[in-house]
Length: 401
Ligand SMILES: Nc1nc2c(ncn2[C@@H]2O[C@H](COP(=O)(O)OP(=O)(O)OP(=O)(O)O)[C@@H](O)[C@H]2O)c(=O)[nH]1
Ligand SMILES: [Mg+2]
Image (cartoon, rainbow, N blue to C red):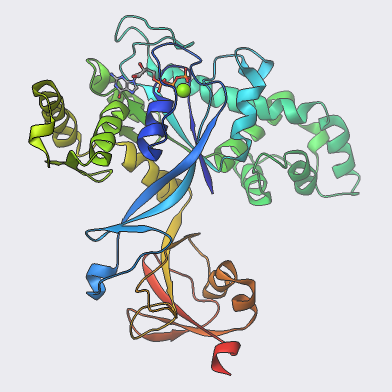
């Protein structure tokens, strides 16, 4: 699963990305700083089960810091998108191409209203960030529409003649955009359009239909960035009215905190509501004041800088993922090498015990017999649906032999 960081130019996408991944990327106060997308690994943050089971863990595929598990996830920082991109304006389709593979989007918005639709600096509060949300929705929809409308007459006729199913034809046309059949079925249901008579759909019908495909296939949340600036808070309230999960955010503060933590100047985990200064002697007065400002004006006021919360929400709420801890030895909660709670798998809600076995290894999936859920120590069957923070031991035919 891949999450795209999107939005118009100059809103702080690269700052957000760099704060999340600690990859140094170009950040500047003008539009189109990013031209080539940046791809990297960030983390989702989840309470580790080690505390609950009272064990000392040995993480392998993730990290555990004082009972908080950080599980790697993939993020992509996209170039800025301007109105008309779908027709080739700005970096145009090149930008849109980057989000083809994204399964969900974090839309970074300049909540301070200090940048216009093209990302140019304007007086704080003079631009309405709600406009940015509407334009991005439209850009994405029109981009998808453009991919399908030229072939629509032929495609709809083929479907109507019964030579191929409508959903399959659309899926094929939009393949490469991470659009699946269930997204298309959902769009049909939501619009109530007649799937047996697609040649009768008007242009508006088709756009409405594509709009629903977009919503289903590229779910989005808003990172209301630059919350440290005046006017931002009142705009957040208005952004919330648009119906998206909206997270007040200060990417700049997160980047500063993560970098200070990396240098071991402070003790701070992404998403914390506070930090501790470890090396006061290594900080100038200015640096200490800046840190204290972030603590008071961002962390204490909003609960965190918002960056980690946005990433967590993208994976847990937009993509409905759950975390699962596969183990081999039920008694020690370890793998065969003795590593306690080594791995965390991020899987879609509804994944079954056998599907998890397949994800770990095809052979394990094929030789699956049953499994144990460590919390209740109960035996579970192949159809058991995994719950968040389940610890699962899989018994395969091979192991039994
Ligand atoms: N005040 C404030 N400024 C921020 C924040 N996050 C980013 N910025 C500033 O906003 C400007 C743009 O940041 P970038 O991260 O380069 O923005 P971008 O969205 O990647 O821009 P493009 O690549 O041009 O599309 C820079 O001057 C950042 O320092 C924030 O939380 N608060
Ligand atoms: Mg950028």
